[in-house]
Length: 463
Ligand code: NAD
Ligand code: UGA
Image (cartoon, rainbow, N blue to C red; front, side):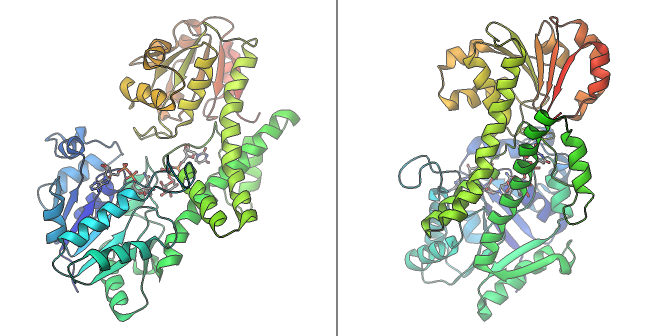
């Protein structure tokens, strides 16, 4: 079975970049990305590809090459489903904010809506691919909806989780560590798996394409995120001990990372991990474990989140304590608001929680981030519902340059590891600040010795 028409439901951080790369690498396949959000689709179709809604290095060039050739963005969901042989579901699966499992379980309402829409529209057999991150055994529910509400056509459900990281999405998609495809072990299931393998084989070595049963694939995605986040919480736990003992967490990370069994990656101590997925996926894992009565398993993974929350709070507490136990009326400059560099995504960014804590202490926050708008920062704070929008608005100033944001500040907090921060004229920034001038490096990206020689009181993470 040769695939020539693909539809992807969800034009977000996963659907957009993933489909752009499939379209670029498979010019013989027509790829249509659909979304209910009209503005998002309008932005993906902006004639100037620098204005597409998601910032990722290299993405705008790929969209410029493929869009209008074999890559299309549209709000006509039914039409795209009807035409396609393969339908990727790439919609959001946030943590539930209501009802059973509130605050823990994944909210599958968007997934169910997609399944119902596919069932209603499909007049021919289709392959439905779970691209969103889902609780293990979701494919069962999708299959039941498709088979019971459909038009009598056959559906094969595949699980094909996405492992890209934001900020490096294009690189990760072009050069993945592996592609994982889970499907039924029946002959129809194997035909569907092979059809999807052939799509990826246009640019990925076949030995990197791993096929499994559906449940292993679904659970592997949650497991991968849990392991990655666990490494960060592990090194962050050590960072607190380092601060008490005179050890330096960067040195500890280097020393343990040279053990080939541990490896050097993902050992960077920080103000805490953010992003839309680590917390949501671990909470979901904890919920699943609890729902099977596996309380020890649930408690084990929950510690990763508890440690991360502690790390964020510890950072804001440290700022308050160091500034003589009061930040009321003091100006604290934030460099960075995004949850990591090279993305405009702010979901669950540590900056939001640190700002919230400091505003509670009546600090004035002045922020510079190269890719995040003031409107986004304010909506992130409003979402917490700690205070009124008006109060957030008057507690937060935003600037187009770090030099302006830092002028007159009592302290600077580095919240995102944007490369440009390492190239600044720190003497000039120091001269423009209130004295003593403090610098809290939540990402350990700056040179402590150099800053101290200028006159800064420098506090990194874990040293
Ligand atoms: P997102 O919120 O950026 O995008 C989801 C899009 O789906 C939105 O634009 C929304 O309007 C659209 N949508 C929702 N319901 C719809 C419907 N019924 N019909 C049409 N469109 C609909 O989310 P994302 O970051 O792209 O994440 C999507 C999934 O991928 C999640 O399950 C996430 O866990 C997973 N994932 C995300 C990343 C990442 O880096 N962001 C990486 C790997 C996996
Ligand atoms: C993460 C995973 O890395 C991806 O494989 C996965 O596909 C994705 O989640 C997902 O499922 O959404 P992402 O959250 O985009 O990707 O970015 P990461 O590079 O993993 O960073 C997550 C957070 O951890 C960031 O806030 C980052 O600053 C922080 N981090 C990362 C550290 O504090 N220390 C590190 O050593 C690494």
